[in-house]
Figure (cartoon, rainbow over the protein chains, first blue to last red):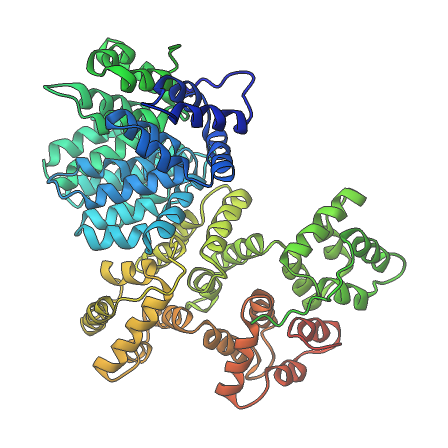
Length: 319
Length: 319
């Protein structure tokens, strides 16, 4: 499911650190070597490299990457090199510090809450957030956003979903009714809605959404879209898609980052970095289904240089 | 802060297991030996004993304790021998299966949510709950309780509080107002109340409660009590006390378990087993302050035999 390619025989963390250190030395940086190492190591291996680098040189690898690399390439490599929980905590903080209108800047929080790699990952993000920012993620959501967005996001980031496929068709049926009722009465932030979306396991939720379509004719995200164009409707639509099909959501994120004039590199980087070792193979497949073209070609068309090479490496290309 | 006494030199898990196995053999069980071992081992040491026992005899220590011990003594030893997260998950399930009126049977859930030994412990309980019961704790709370109790308890068990002492007096001041307003308008389940009680760190909450008393004359739990005698008021009062002073809550639990005719052994056992290695020293001190008598004497007066000896061992007595 991941597109990350880790070599069969992985060099020791010490070897990797020495090669990285060498790549940083002298005039300029040997970006190719940085990509060839970090772009082919999983989260656990990157953690060992960070730790070993600190032991060997008494310096932070992240800090050295910050001073050696620049631009979108630098940002992408650094985001990738962080521990995934710390990375997501930082993305959440950035999202909450953004003062743009609309809800697009809140997507990273929805993604980590509704499509985490595991329920533990979300807890690890909350823990990292506390360590980095001296308060809980939920507190920051509460003091940054107003109702009803706050209520829904606090519920979602507090979730610890059962992660096995246990489905009750009775629950699907009755909760499809509750959701339909809430949409019908324009009570999208009803306690019931928040409770259903933030406690049910994703397999149950998918069954509930299927049941909804069967009973009421439209997919639930369409009914939400048709019920209004406000932030609340937009937020819920993204939440439902993230829960129902993370790969569809991330295919949309990649597409949105490249359509129109200019590229939203932060968005593109986030989608590829956060999913390369989770489900990027499925995201690529879904992208092809949705847009009848390859995601790799889209990335090639909209990026260049080391940044392009690094993203393609994470997408599984042999550079 | 704990009353549990662990010897300076702890025997190896294998030694402990062999002595336990011997204590189970033949006619009857040597309860004294069981107490002398398990009553003097911390959670980590008990885990190793459980694992070693399984390796040595291919049997579960818990299952053997179940067949060897009986009555309140057996229940107490077994509760103590479980992994603390599994123990609390089982207590939560029991609480949700109890159909008594009122909210007293929900106290265990409030305790693990509002006075956990650490934020990680609460997550570990949620994880254990998923493993044991094929659904999340929040789902079971939702399908067992109705609004508004459900809303408040789901919020609380989903919390992951920042665990260091960071206090803002501005927050204390404005949130004391919000809480007072909610009590005044009899909106105790207002989104604001749930959000404050389930996301703020306990140091902040204590400052907020102090600020409340200063501004409005009464401690908040008294104003809640005076605002009504329903389940919601009772629940919130216990929540506030658990957050404000877990030692006061547990002193009350011990006292409530022994006053009147007969003893509520399950309640007494729960208080001592769940706090013996957390803060029982403070609970004992608070008990003395509140009731002008010693908790040890109260336990001696209301229990007997092996059960008494086991509880006193956990309370730090030398038996």
